[in-house]
Length: 566
Ligand SMILES: *[C@@H]1O[C@H](CO)[C@@H](O)[C@H](O)[C@H]1NC(C)=O
Ligand SMILES: *[C@@H]1O[C@H](CO)[C@@H](O)[C@H](O)[C@H]1NC(C)=O
Ligand SMILES: *[C@@H]1O[C@H](CO)[C@@H](O)[C@H](O)[C@H]1NC(C)=O
Ligand SMILES: *[C@@H]1O[C@H](CO)[C@@H](O)[C@H](O)[C@H]1NC(C)=O
Ligand SMILES: *[C@@H]1O[C@H](CO)[C@@H](O)[C@H](O)[C@H]1NC(C)=O
Ligand SMILES: [Cu+2]
Image (cartoon, rainbow, N blue to C red; front, side):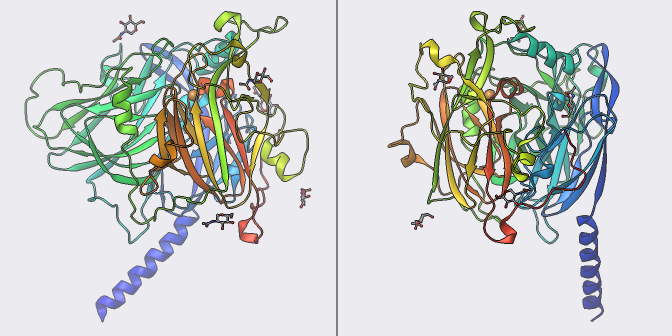
C-alpha cells in the first residue's frame, strides 16, 4: 500500500516535472568573442561566448522557447536543423525564406516544437556563412518511461566536426562572393572546436574523451563543417551506428563513418581495448579531387582512466579511407536501415506527386559593369541550380510572410516538377549552353497530405561532386539511389520500401541519383538546399509551400508578435 502510494506520488511528480519541462526557456546571446587557434587570434561569432555553442537537452515531444539576443554587429538567424516544427515555420530560421534577419541589437523568441524526433540533431545560424562558428548539438532524449533501443550508455558526448579559417569567416564569404570562383580553403578541421595535435599551436587544447575500460559511450556526432563531407574513426576501436538525423537505425558495426555536412549520427563506442591513449581522427571525403579542398586531419584523444604507462608518446592514428574513396563512403551511406521500433515505418506507397529535380553546378556570364571579378571557368562566375533555376533569396522580405499575407511580387509558384529540358544528365562533354541557369525565386506548391516522391539527379555540368541535400520541416525516407541517369522503368524495382532510413539530409553521390519519399503533412514554407555552403550560396536550393488542409488542426499557426521585420 505504502509502495503504491509512493509510486503514485512519484508519477505525479514526474508529470509535474514534464509540464515544467514543456515550458523551458533558454537564453542565446549572439556575440563576438576573441579566439586563438593555429597560432593566431581573431574574433568569432558565438552563442553565449562558446564554440561550439551550448548543447540543448530536450525530451521527445517537448516545446521550448529560445530567446535569441543579437549582441553582435551582424544580422543573424538560427535554424533548428531536423526539427519539424509542426505547423509552425515561423521559427525555422532560414533568412529571407521564413523570416527576416535579427539585426544587431534585436531579439526574437523562437518557439522550437519537437515532435517525432529522437536522438541527435543540431542548431546553427542560417545567415550567410556564420554557421561556421554559430552552431551546437541538440540532444533529444526518449520520453519518460521509454528507453533507448540499445543498452543504456555509461555516458553521452557530443562530438562536433567543424571547419576553421584563420581569416574572419565574414571576409572569406565576402571575398568568395566578389571573386566568382571557389572560396579559399579552410586552414583546419576541428573536433569540438579544437584542431588537435597535427596542427601548429594546438597540442595542449586537443579535445580529450576520458573513458573507463568496459563501459560504452554514446557519441552524438554532428558534421558542422561548412564545405566538406568527412570520414571519422577511432584507432583500434569499432563503432556502432545506432541512429542518424534524429531517428534510430538498425545497429551497424563499422571501422569508420562517412558523415555529410548537416547530418548527425548516434554512434556507440565500447571502451574495450588495452588501457592507453588512442586518436580519434577526421578528414575529408570528396569525389572531386580537382576542386580545391583542405586535406588536413583533425584529431582528439580517447584516454583510458587508470594507472598505466602509455605504450608510446604519441597515440596511434586510425586508418581512414583515402579522401577520394567513393566506395568507402558508399559503404556507410547505403547501409543505414530504419529500426521499426517505436516509430512505425510509414513509407508512402501511393505517390500522388512525382517530382524530378536536377542538381547542377553552373556558370553565369560576367557582368562587365559589376564590381566583382569573374575567376570562374572561362572568365565566368560560378552558379548552381535545381531544375535549372538558381535560387535567388528575396531581398527585402521573406517568402513565408509574403505567402501568409498575400504579398505579391516576392516569389513565383513556377518551380517545375520536372526539368524543362531533359538531357544526358551525367554524360561527359555536355554542350556549353546547358551551363547557364535562370536566376529566380520560384517555389513548388504541394497539396496538404500529398504523398511526394522526389528523384534528386546529380548532373555532370562542370564538376560532378556530391551534394548533401537537406529538407526543412519534414524528414523523408531514402528509398533508393544509384549512379548514372535515373531509369524510371528499372530503378524503382530496386527501391527499399521495407526499412529505408528516415533522414533530413541525404548525399547525392557524384553523377548519381537518390529517391526520397515523404508525406506533405506539415503546412508551411520549407527550404530544400545543398548543405555545402559554397553551393547554396551559388543558388543550389528551392522552396516548398505545403498548403493548409481543410481542418483547423491542419492549418499553419499564426506568427508570433515579435517576428523580425525587414
Ligand atoms: C595537401 O595539400 C598540400 C597543398 O596542395 C600538399 O602539399 C600536401 O602534400 C597535401 N597533403 C596530403 C596529406 O595529401
Ligand atoms: C492513391 O491515391 C489516390 C489519390 O489520393 C486515390 O484516388 C487512390 O485511391 C489511391 N490508391 C490506393 C491504392 O490507395
Ligand atoms: C490571403 O488570401 C487568402 C485566400 O484568398 C485569405 O483566406 C486570407 O485571409 C488572406 N490573408 C491575408 C492576411 O490577407
Ligand atoms: C536554363 O535556363 C537558361 C536561361 O533561361 C537557358 O538558356 C538554358 O538553356 C536552360 N538550360 C536547361 C538545361 O534547361
Ligand atoms: C540586415 O538585415 C536588414 C533587414 O533585412 C537589411 O536591410 C540589411 O541590409 C542587412 N544587413 C546586412 C549587412 O546584410
Ligand atoms: Cu552541393
